[in-house]
Every structure is written in structure tokens, then in C-alpha cells.
Amino acid sequence: MVVPGLSNGDLALLTIVRKSYPAWFMGIIGAAGALTAMVPAAILILAAATLFAKNFYREMFAPNMTDAQVEKLARVMVIVITLIALYFAIYSSTTLVNLLLLGYAGVTQFLPGVLFGLYGVV
Image (cartoon, rainbow, N blue to C red; front, side):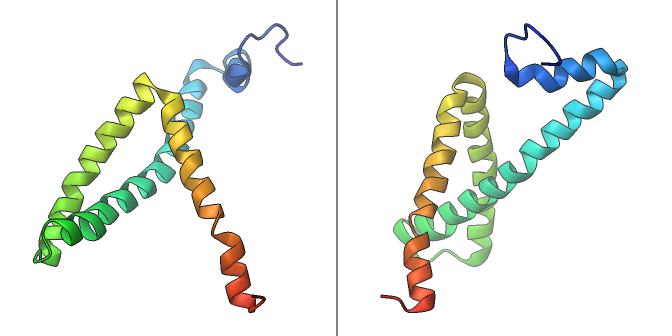
């Protein structure tokens, strides 16, 4: 309603900021948007790298790995997973969104069992 004829609704906030504020303020809005995307992504990448190194690689291929070796592998996997996620974000952004939705939907499948287990309703 504020910007009539806007073809892409995802750009409404940026269009209003561009028309209402100086150019440097658009940089602040862009930086805030980038930060809000990086925080959850960092948590997901750290969790995925740790799970891969500790629960998959050590269990399947190297059961004698020390914790220090697992830590080094997890640090390398952070870079690998970040590059894979960056590739998907640039070349196939819908795939990345579908993977996140699938992961969150999978976690919500456990909610009834957890609630029934906590309250002993079974």
C-alpha cells in the first residue's frame, strides 16, 4: 500500500528505506539483515560439523580418535559445510530452504512423544 505497483513484495522494506532515508542508512539495514541471517546459520553449521565429526565419522571410520582429533575434524567440517551451504544459497536457494524446513519438521515430529513422556500420559 505504501509502494504501489511493487512487483516483488520481498523488497518492500528496502524500497521504503531507499525512498525515505539517506543512502548510508540502507547499508545499516543491509548489515542488520546479514547479521540476522548469520547467527542461526552459524549455530546450525557448528552443530552439523560437531555431529558429523563426533557421531558419524568417529563412530563409523575411526573409533580410536581422540577428542583433540575430533575437534580438528569439526573445525575443518565447519569450512566444508559453510562452502556447501554457500553454494546452495547462490545457485539453488530453494533447496536450502527446503532442507531447513525438512529439518525443523522432523524435530517437531518428536513433540508429542516428548510431551507424553514428560507427563506420563501413555
